[in-house]
Length: 130
Image (cartoon, rainbow, N blue to C red; front, side, top):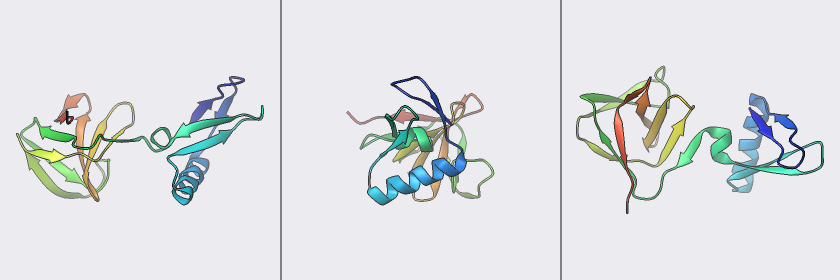
């Protein structure tokens, strides 16, 4: 992952080990950001969502299945175990949204993820509370 310093525009490279360490530090301090240090002496406040790909959904956010059927998986990956299923028109609560820039997934419970968009196909419509 690359973070560009707001002060000197230096590219700060974070490998997987550094990302995991940053997430662990956020968990330990109960903060939802990590201050990535730069060689210029400044820190670059980086939100948890940038490091994890997760975005907390607004309270009351729901998803409506817009495909015939949709698998529920243990994590946001098609190689993870299937733990359930949803059917067309079913509405579920959405707690977090994860994206890798191509695919988008919704966490609908503990250890329960369903695809919102996968390989360019829309599978779930997000309904935000008003």
